[in-house]
View 1: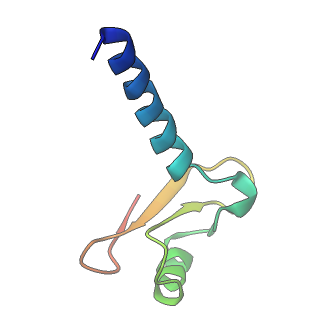
View 2 (view 1 turned 60 degrees about the vertical axis):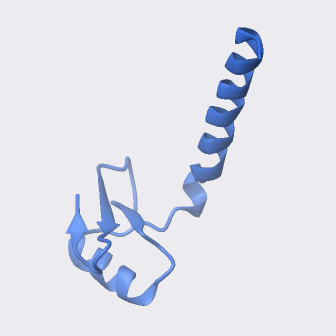
Length: 73
């Protein structure tokens, strides 16, 4: 393949990866604090990430650990 084709494929790969992980702000599942994040993860088994706070600019995110439940911010 030519360099131009490889560059185009690399750009497409990056674009699709970003599109697949992006979510509209309105669709985010936000929490106010770590305590609420823990409750959220207990109820929502399909989510691995959430962010805080519910209003204003996002300043923190919480991640469900691979081993279940531990929060990282």
